[in-house]
Each structure stands twice: as C-alpha cells, then as structure tokens.
Image (cartoon, rainbow, N blue to C red; front, side):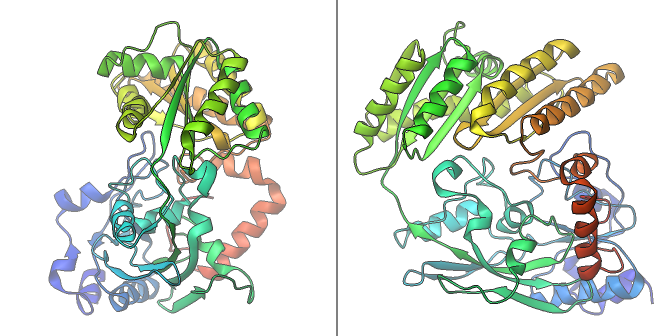
Length: 454
C-alpha cells in the first residue's frame, strides 16, 4: 500500500492535500535564503489520533515528516524536504480550557497567540510571550522555536510558560510531560527539552501554559540619542539601577531612516538611535520620569514620555513598522537574532555597522535591548548573485561577532536551516554529540524534520 493510501486509511479526505500547486504553498516558512524541498503530501489533522496515524504511517514507510504551524518562522525550520509529509497543525486550533484559579490554559498547537491573549484577557489574565507576529503565529510554532517578544525583558520567554505537553513521538506513541501545578520537579524536565526542539523530537499536540494576572496599561517613553553607544549606555544604566520595564526596545539609524521613508514619522535625521521604554507598574509616570533622567544623563538629545495609552501606541508605532520598512529597501531580507549580554550591546551594533560598510550593504538593527536580543536585518537584491553572496557573508560575520561577544546565534528564531552550520560552533563537539544522542533516542529513524538543527 502506498503512502497516500495508508494516510487515507486513518484521515478524512479533506485532510489530505496532493495537488502540487497547493502543496507547494506549504514548502517554506518566511525565511529567505533557505533551501526547501518538494513535499509528497500535506496533511491537516484535527485530532491527536489522526496525528498518531500520520506518524505511524511515516515510521512504517520511513518517510520524513515536517511539522508546521503558521509558517511565520524566520529560520527555515518549517521548510519541506523532498518527498516528506508536511504535517500542518493549523486545524488543531481549540482553546480547551482556561482556569483562572490555577492560572493555566490548555491549548492545541494551532491556536494563534493573539487568540489566547484575548481569551485570557476575558478572565483578567494574560499570556505574556508576544512575538511580533502574534496575530498570525501559532502557539505550537512558538513552543517549537522557544519564541520571545517585546515584553520578554520583564515577563520572560515561551519556555517559562510551558508547564506540560502532550507529544506524539516518531513512532506514534503519545507522551505526556510536565504538570498542571504551580510547582513540580518529578524526573528529568522533558517539557523543557521539547521547547525549542523545532519539531525534531516529537509533535506537540496539546500544551498546558501558565497565565499571569493582566497588568495595568503601560506608558511609553521615547529617547533620541546621538550615538548607539549613548543609547546602550542608557540601557545598561536602566537595568543596573533595578528598573523593570515591560519593554525596552532600540532602533539604529538605518532602521529609523527606513521607517521615516515609509511612514513619514518625522524623526530627526541626526538621530543615531531611538530607545523606547515602557512600564506597566502602578505608577508608570514616575518610572518613566526616572528612566528619562537616566537617558538624559547618558546623552539623550530628546526625551518624550507619553501621558496616555494612545500616545504610547503612537510612540511604539515606529518600532512596530521597522521590519516592514526594511523589507521595502530591497527585494529580500535576512533577519538575524543574535543575542549578547546587555553590557556588550553597543559593540554588536557598532560591529554590525562596520560589517554593513565592509560589504556595501544596508543592514538595519532593531533590538529587544532589555535582554540583549538584536535583529540585524540584511537587505539585498535576491536576483543579484554577487549581492546575495555578500549578504550571506555579512550574515555569517554578524553571527561570528555575536559569539565573540559572549552571545548566542539565536535568541528566539531558532536554528532551522539558516543557522545549523553555526550551531556546532556555539555548542562544541561534546555538546553536539549529546544533542545528536538525544535526537537518536526520540527519533531513531531520523524522520522528524530532517536537515534542521544539525
């Protein structure tokens, strides 16, 4: 019996897509410059049992499986491989439970991040991890890539909110990990092992997520600086003084000018860096005043605190538009997510500017400055072979710089295809040996998302 016939034995007809014009649309995520193959079939299960059937079939026939969420990823982790089953989990999109007493949500992997945020909000609760694509990205994808967001500086990343998982293993068995309780340390932490594993160890089909009380509305401050060094000095001072901003974001000169060109934001051409700080504390105005004073002392040329939520949104608009504005500069972008210690942030930004000059490219940087996570965005013409070569070389130089500064090659986007050559450099031979050993335990046939990570 062939692959399609076996899949049809346990899946409804509408869950199986074989038209090449349709399946081709599932071949890639949003990353540029990443190789992708041609899937044999796309399946869209709605139940755990259907996912188990897909994995049992794949194991029996030794067919690779590429799990997918909303395909908003930026590292090629969801890219198809030749002849694979693309296992799209977007139809498993139910919020199964929100428990205000235990402060948990139980969700299927296809639930959109923003949908959970809104549902939790109706109970006076919040789900803090908020990637920039939160209106589109799925929670299963967030878990697979251990994604972050703007508010991570205060509230942490996805891994800190995943309490338990139901995972279908490569052979179709169902594994439950973790807990529903506030505390629990029984056995090895397999839950954390799956978070960030990019679909290489198993397929998440249900998650127990921690919720927090909804915070007060935040107020935002914008500070303009004559240099990235001055802006980064302000970041270091803000954190060293014990402030807990709900958001601390930075844009470099290239990003500011791209946003100005697109949206006519009116930011001065002399601004070399824009720092945005927000507080959702009981007295946010007082916190903004204290941080504003630190920015001024660090050399800010202008400090603008918002007085209302509406003014705050206006100030944040420039940051929200950054990646869209940079995508208009050239036909393609490569978005990095190197993370360095906050104390080395200025060195990374200045080093990236030097790399842009070295290769004759436009590279804009926006950053979650509060946790040192930067997003250098290389803009290039994909139709120009030489410019594409220089773009890739600059991307590699930025990752090398991040490692030299004591950082990591990925803070929240994952390794995928784009960075797998760099994973070995960061982890070293012993680390890689153990990582591959773990992969072999969970996926001895190597059928789960092959060609990613390693």
